[in-house]
Amino acid sequence: AQSQMALLNTNTRYLHDNIIEYAERLTATLPENLSVCFFVNSGSEANDLALRLARIHTGKEDMLVVDHAYHGHTGKLIEISPYKFDGKGGAGAPEQTHVVPMPDGIRGKYRYGDVDIALNYAKEVKEQINTIDSGIAGFITESIMSCGGQVQFPDGYLKEVFKIVRAAGGICITDEVQVGFGRVGTHMWAFETQDVIPDIVTMGKPIGNGHPLAAVVTTPEIAASFHNGMEYFNTFGGNPVSCAVGLAVLDVIEEEGLQQHALDVGSYFKAELESLKQKHDIIVDVRGQGLFLGIEFTRNQESLEPADTEAALIVNALKQEGILLSTDGPLYNVIKIKPPMTFNKENVDFVIHHLDKVLNAFA
Image (cartoon, rainbow, N blue to C red; front, top):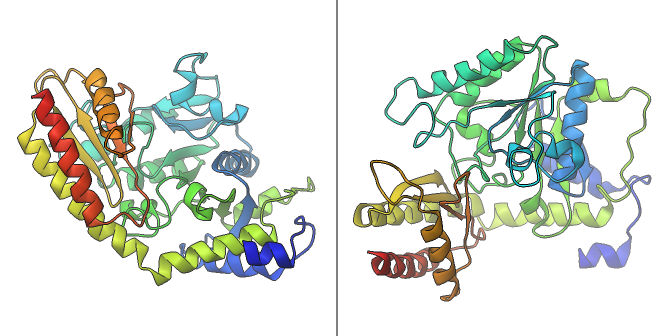
């Protein structure tokens, strides 16, 4: 960033090698047909543009969203974010937004252990579509739920849902703003863990390692629908400095093996958390993968009464030890763990030691 800033920065009316090189490098990490990039400045801006693309391409307005999802802070995104419109200050779902159940195997309608859990949750999507007379523009979801409580979908869920949505004429959008860029460890993109290829992928946050950069990547067919005479212009999205930053991030992920690092450290971290779960009854579930993990707390393993107050106290106690965590989920009883990609096993041991000490105090 410093080097490119000293050399040249312009608005994006002027073509620069960096934007071409960055688009090529970024799309090389994705399935072949995801080959057209729109560069923007934030995850919210990326999701807002994805929503426009879906509606223009299909000619429809109605969107399917997963319960308790959050996709950004613009007016249009609040309308497809149950986390917001069903929360404090919200006015409920707008007419064109249709909410499907979050595939939560701990508290949801269908639970872990049900061999058809993925199919059953997918059927809920089909039933919701059948109630919409006007047709649908699409379905948007994070590849792993964040505000929903770090919920990892059952195997096969997105594959089945994508079939259903496409059969109804809609397109499928995956929000990789929090989970992309190797964080899940096994893959560069979290949607790959579900063996699907979306029609639109949005990305942000880690894409610029703190620099305001985000992107929408889609197919040539959807991009062609957007090329309808209404010029799309973004002053800062894809400027030479932002693209230099994006290239540097891809370099570091590759050169330092951060995806493999996330897999190794994340697997170790999750195993250590599972050991704590066996020791402390307050933990009802450990979930996620790579360096995207969640711990759900309960006061009773049978009734699943949410330990929301306790989760908040745990977060504050750990803060005194220099460990920064926070709570999330519909019941605020999930501690979310999304450390920097450089987080190592020594750091894991430090967190586990202090978490165990705090949980012992509760016991």
